[in-house]
Amino acid sequence: MNALRTLAFAACAMLAPCAARAWDPAGHMIIDQIAWEQMTPAVRTRADDLVKTLDSRFNAGQPYHFVTAGCWLDDMRGLGREYPWSKLHYIDIPWTPAGAPIQSPSAPHVVSAIEDSVKALRDPAADSSQRTVALGMLVHLVGDIHQPLHATERNNDRGGNTYLISGVPFSDLGQKQLQTLHTYWDKAFRFDAVDGRILETWTAPRVDNRPGAPGQGVIVTEARKIMAEFPRSSLPEVAEPADALRWATESYRIACRQAYPPGDPPANTEVRPLTPEFVHESHKIACRRLAVAGYRLAALVNDLLGP
Image (cartoon, rainbow, N blue to C red; front, side):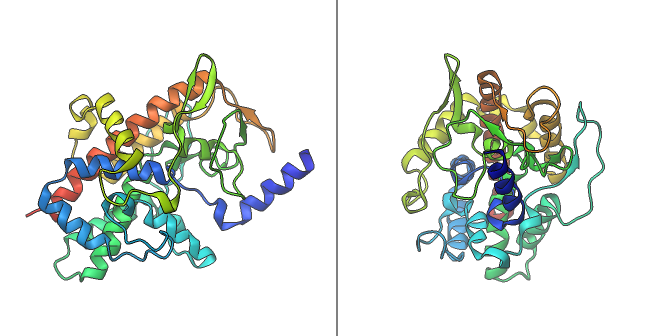
């Protein structure tokens, strides 16, 4: 069994489908739904007009709308080795025990990609296709930068992608996905612990069952639960000016202090079980991060596409 696990682990490190992601598609759609509820009617119309022309070959052939557009950049991983945006989803800031002050690594990374997308949307010379891609990238990357393990790596673990875990009842891992700490954080908002047992609290919709429009299905239900638990007025960080590096630093500090289980990281191919206590705390952190990302995305899109 150990030999098989080692072989699978090595294969995963080389294959594109195992590349780091941030929030699963349901998480990105929740962020976009939260943002949608804070956007003005005129901005909603402009945003939908742009994203509906995104390449939808990996969206079950359905045009994107604003809520599903957050999935587009990950959907395009279906291109395999031709996928050009792998380095733009994260920023590798070396882990420190207390999240010490950091110096931004060299671009490209998620911070520079957000800044470039904002510049493109502000550019009066940009054509509609350029603005479409810029908005499609922005709605995804603002989500990515709020996932704690997309802002750090510890002992070259690629944001927890080589930190093997057990004890989490995943229902939707891909065929080539291992149970890792990074994968868990992508979905932490859907897991909690009740009476000492780790549970998946709801199931994410498949690609062919994504909401047909904003405000439909389980996504709006869960988004509004998170908004009720974390209203905008309760999150002082949302009032700060938009700053991608500040957002990355915020995620980095959360990652250093709270995203890894206590103790030293596992060695080699050791599998570390997650405890119900860790899952419960990370569930609350993840839900708050989705709320913060949604409110910040709304403010940014209102500014970029508003009058």
